[in-house]
Image 1 (cartoon, helix red, strand yellow):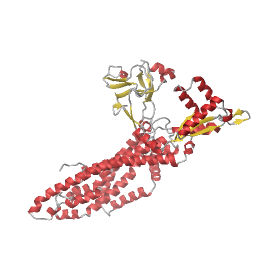
Image 2: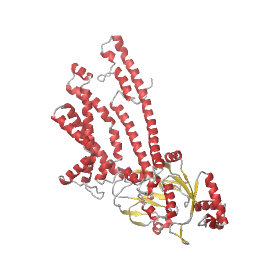
Image 3: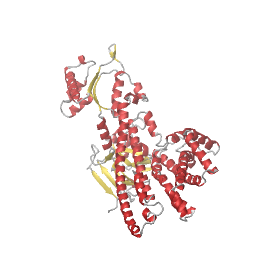
Image 4: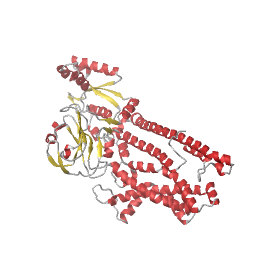
Length: 572
């Protein structure tokens, strides 16, 4: 669509002067006076259309993200064999008989395949609702080894359980006890449960509506004192004598909803948190967003004063305290440190997060690629068909033709043997040289691509009619090159800059694995190998958002560089 608009615009305006082409062709003075007005109308038309185009691009981007995530969820939950989630599960192989079946259904529920309810859970619920007393519940719990061995009370409630859940579309399964002689074998205990596959549309809806979680004072089940928010200018974690504004909650999931500290970005909030999906194997029990953003490496110990006044050297970050009912009484040290159930905290570590390592390497590789690729591409175009151009082509062909894994290993060997650079990433190392080989290896293909495309764009511009017209008009080669050829050739290159910056956070799978970089690049492959559905879906959403954002930002940047493109709507 952008190409059509540019073509229409170029019919009205010259790339050299921006004036009407009829005026350039020397029409009479009457037409010459009227052409700017016609140009203004055309410019307004282009701006209006491009404004609508940008809005559509954003809407289409959102729809595309939803479709991509939905397709991934369909593949995971409908097309792949759900038994594969146990291929790397050592706990599953240790189970046997009925216990293995129960373990399967419990894990399938965790992984989001189905809703699973045991007979015992159902009895606890109806007892909590006052439908049966405690004595009846205890008696009904004693499920017989086989249906015919059930007591009258058990048979009554088994029939109610079966009737209720089958009416709700569940499949009720009863596993008879597996015996050897008169004894029940290990793992062969009888069981009764109901299970129902979760509808895909409902799963997709629940996922997208739960991405942003808003904290509130009713999140915690039971809290001491009055629920509410407290604003203070002097954070008690700093002794109450240092100016540090904070908003502290009681009844919220997070103790601190807003706070300041000395770590970038210095001001932090927990009012709204991103939940991409919980991991069940890659980083068990941790959300994908936290897996990618939490610091790594060795603990950073410093003197900490806990809410009770107890002091010790600790890596605990008390600003991240989260409520867990009963957690204070569960551990003796928690009673010493905390005066409420806000005891679950993150720890401060010396390294960067997965996103941090990937972004540092990716952004420095992108800077290196643009700093080298663009000048070399210009030089190849200016020295077309010379030895310089030939050498550039050879490098480009080599990078494209040789598998990336091969040349990364070659460069790794050369860097380690000849230049004595570290070939394995170490988070505990203080040397910045550990970044050199991953950055250079990641930059090599980008340099080749920039050289290739900029040379091609510049050669195309050099052969354009407007360049020949400019020469005949007396413009110098330097003016033609700097003001027209290079500027027009760089427009498509500019579109890729936001993508290079944003996708730096994604990481590079091969480069990070070869150099053992603890970045985000390996997260998706690890999740796929371990069939960690939550991580797969969450990382897919993350990648999709970055891709759409990079395309839209690229369009905006092109509009900034090229005056023929505008995304603002101008009133007529």
